[in-house]
Every structure is written in C-alpha cells, then in structure tokens.
Image (tube, rainbow, N blue to C red):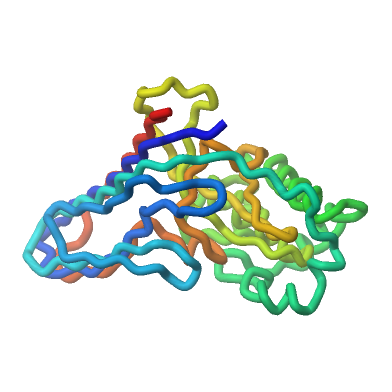
Length: 280
C-alpha cells in the first residue's frame, strides 16, 4: 500500500559573530524513481538567499545558495510531499554469473571499489565471502545486512559523520550511517554493486493520517542484482512505504544534507528538526 507523506527538515545555525559571506549546498530534495514520486519540494532559507538547482554526478538534486549580507543566524528548510511504495527485489534476479561479468563490473566499477568511509578490510572481506556461501545474490544481500544488524548496537553519539565502517565495527556501536557503511563494505567484498542512500524514515508503521511526528534522517543501502532495490540494515527490513529517499552515492561523503563554507564568526550552535506527517 502506498503512502503520501509531508517531510519538513529544518536546520538552524547560530554564529558567535557576523558572517559576511557563505556558500552552501543542500541535498534535501527527494528523488523521483520507481518507488516514489515527488509531488512538491522546495528549499527555503532565512535570511533569503540566491539559489539554483542542479543534479549531481550520482543523480541527487542539489540546491546551491549563497548569502553575502552580514548575518548571525541561518535557517535552511526543506519541505517535500512524496508518495512512496514498497519495492521488493525483482522476481527473477540476476545470478552470480551476471554480477561477475566484466560488463557489470565495468558499469558499476565505482560502486564496487572502496571509498572514504567504506574502506577495504581483509577480515571483513572473508566474513562477506562466508556469508554469501550457498546463497543467491539477493539472499546474500539480506544475510550481510542482517549480520550487521546483529553485530552492531544502535547507540547515538558514539560515532560521527567522519567515522568509517571499520571504525564503527571495532566499536560495535553506531547509528544508521554506520550500519549502511558496514553493509556496503560486505556487499562490495562479495562483488555486488551497492550504494549508500540518505533520506528519512517515518518511525511508526501504522501511522495515523494527519498526525505530525518527529521523524528521522536515515540511511540505508541499495544493491544491484539485475535491478536496484533497497534494504535497511538498521531495522533489518526491506525499504518500504515509510522510507523517503533523497540522495545516493558511494558513502555519506557523497550525500551530506548540508555542506558549505563561510567567512566570519564561528558557529556557536546548530539545531536540526525533522517532522513527518502521513497525509494518505
């Protein structure tokens, strides 16, 4: 059953002194793809800024904006209305022979290689091969994600945005970003093309229509087994109606919700609020 959701993502910055200029990029616009349709989306700032939108290398929508008037605070708001659905793996997925073909490896080369937050690791590569033994590619993806879910404890604050998959695994603790990175490491070691997905998660499976709740910025993975499909290792479940996808890439480094540079006073505080409302 499809859902319609409104997502409001607000990020506020306070500065210790006046900022004279800032240049920023926001990845807050959901994707339109086979699982979801964007009905409405806009990015607004206070103070008002000049902005333009483009699509980055990975296919994520980026709103770039700059501000050249002195300011001591900045608020960035992403507002979207999205229709979502579930998307299970295809009925006849590709086998290992197709996944290991030179053409497949060439096409998805960047999603098979190590990246900044998903480095290679011999011990975890062996674990990946052991997990995949006797399984078809789809089941191997699920096995890897469930293994990560079992190995890790969800503990906010124990890792940061610059924590790698190996560092998180050594701690056996982390958040959704770390679960996704560790799963990607295993899948790439298996030879399965896999990418990082950023977005939002409505926290209530049987959500009341019209009720606004505190949502979550979230991350999960997509794997290619003849077609792309998503799995959420943090919650050990297929990506479905509660998930709103925004950005894709090799790892978190390709999809930060906000990044930029500024000149002037140092940042004194930051506040992020995500509100999600099921509309239908």
